[in-house]
Image (cartoon, rainbow, N blue to C red):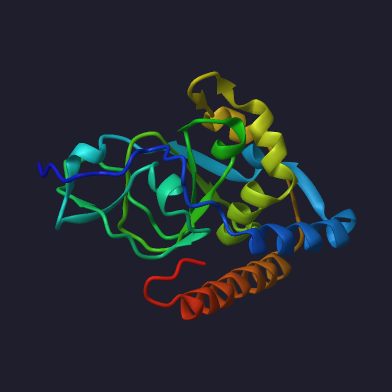
Length: 214
């Protein structure tokens, strides 16, 4: 086991989901959702729970690992690469490349109602992660965007329980309703929103000069 310094799980300066994604996705949903189907995620996904790993297991090398704190400190709508690793303990829950993860614990109901798609196989899901596997009718990127920015966000936030630390369970996510179009439209929406975020992030980095924070 490696004992490396780790960030606070719920930092006050957490990296929030990009505002551009929020405005883009909300605008699309408001304009088109009247023609979309709406169903509970429990009818469209299977569910599992990450297990067996915590920040104390992180090492410099090993199998790629996602811990729930990543969704607060390094938020990404779509996860393809990770920079945390751990030695395999056996019996781990591994990604197949089409999952969606939602943290099981957080500081507030709004914070906890976020999701990321995991698009690389062979990544270990650590403890305190709710893991959804959408069926063929749903695009994982779209589901992550819908939970984080769409009407499903408010629905899930209402189901979070707790005071100083709030929790959300797979049963809560299963009852959350998601509005969605056909699979091709989902992929087109996801591609547009994610491409916009990548472009904005690139421009922001280009504007940063040494010693200047924007």
